[in-house]
Image (cartoon, rainbow, N blue to C red; front, side, top):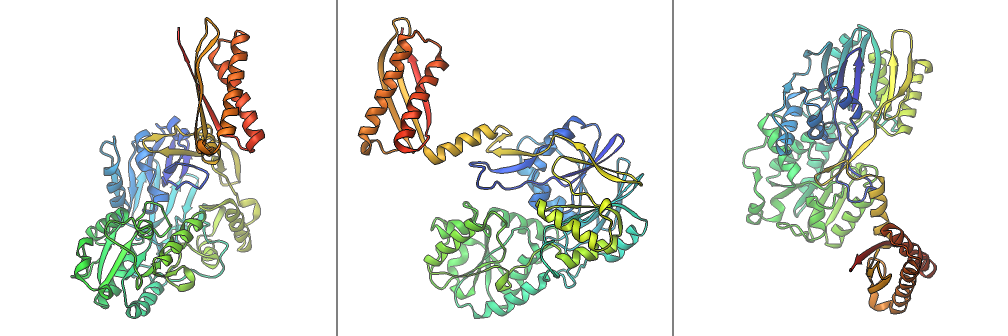
Amino acid sequence: MTAIEYKDEILVIDSGMAFPDEDLLGVDVVIPDITYLANNRDKVKGIVLTHGHEDHIGALPYVLRELPVPVYGTRLTIGMVERKLKEARGLGKQRLVVVKPGEAFKVGGFKVDMIHTCHSIPDAVALAIHTPLGIVFHTGDFKFDQTPVDGRATDFQRIAEVCSQGVLVMMSDSTNVMRPGYSTSESAIGDTFEKLFPHVKGRIILATFASNVHRVQQVLNVAAANKRKVAITGRSMLNNVTVSSELGYLTIPPHTLIEMDEMSRYPDNQLVLLTTGSQGEPMAALSRMANSEHRQVRIKPGDTVLFSANPIPGNEKLVSNVIDMLCKLGADVISGRDANVHTSGHACREELKMMLNLVKPKYFMPVHGEFRMLEHHAKLAEEVGIPSKNIIVSEIGSVVTANKNRIALSGKVPAGRVLIDGLGVGDVGNIVLRDRKQLSEDGILIVVATINRKNRKVLAGPDIVSRGFVYVREADELMNEARKRVDKALGQCMAEGVTDWSSIKGSLRDALGKFLFEQTRRRPMILPIIMEEN
């Protein structure tokens, strides 16, 4: 999410979400902190979307609750947003505006040109935002595919026309800046499918990103050419196929698509199963197949599974585990760029150079990547002739000020991540995560005792319940000694006249925690429950 502000108006670019890494135990998704925008809601004139990927539109159901502003995007992007908002709870009707690539429109005092680019989803665009100080050019996610599946190459002519007016600031996708050369054309993946499909004798199970409509189109085409039927499993895949076909971005060959429960009518060599789960997501359809938990599909020898996607950084272990389980069930697994069954939707170094030379900005700001990628992109910009003083590398929350004379970091605004867990928004923070981590590593001990504070006596207990720490029946000696330590600490509190609940509980935690660490070198969470009887 990027905000462009001039005087008393703000235009927001994209509103994406991220999936949690391994440290965010139990968290479902991560969205941006929009505190600054919420505090300046009267200034926010609209949200402009570059394309329909989750990391660019996924946070909209949460953001629009706080900022009910118009949302602008291309036809497919808005179609995906509509479906997403329908599934969201508590959202009223939103103003969603469809804009054709090549068209210009007004958002408050900003004029925006949407320019068609190639990416791993149709209808991706770059944005040329006209401000009183000059043009801010945002590439969005892009690649220069010279042979796109739909025949719609990046609109170089329009980029050149708009940028000939002079670009003040350029913000550019940095995802693949560390990869040399050029990205492989998406159509090359279709060539691989054409060579591969005729030689597979059993079922083909193909996992890819649900949003890669062009990849899905090629699977459907090659399957039809080889007289194979295609079934689809996975909610996001079904949703995206439905939206894309309804809007005309996906053409389904006649008599090719079948329902899941129709698969049993056809021999294995006439079937293709298109599925979610290319990132090893535990609840995705492919993971359920690998765990033999899928309601309709059982993996068997003779199946060929294609991972038509590379693992997103952080997902490598999940993907590896799914591949291992599939192999154990007898499937042949083909994965990754090495087998030419996947290509990136992001520009590599030579394409990034071309974009820089095409736009010719005065100032350059790399975006969309980890910090090391931004640094590499900054150096790349220097290589093509942009002075280092005109290049700015920012972090989340950074305020970058630009005018005709200079560009500089000028401060910070509240920013970062908001964690979504179930229906809770932002109610999981560092303390909760720390507790979850402790529970996952060392377990919990619950100490229960009943006391009479007036008479200073322990009436019942202490009893200790262990979960995830030790198996009580096999640790009698340890648990008996633990009870003695708790009993002693309680007795001391009673003898000293300590009646404050928090002080009593703190004494129990200290006494028991010290003992357990000495004996086990572990620190379980200790939860004292003290009841009082008059």
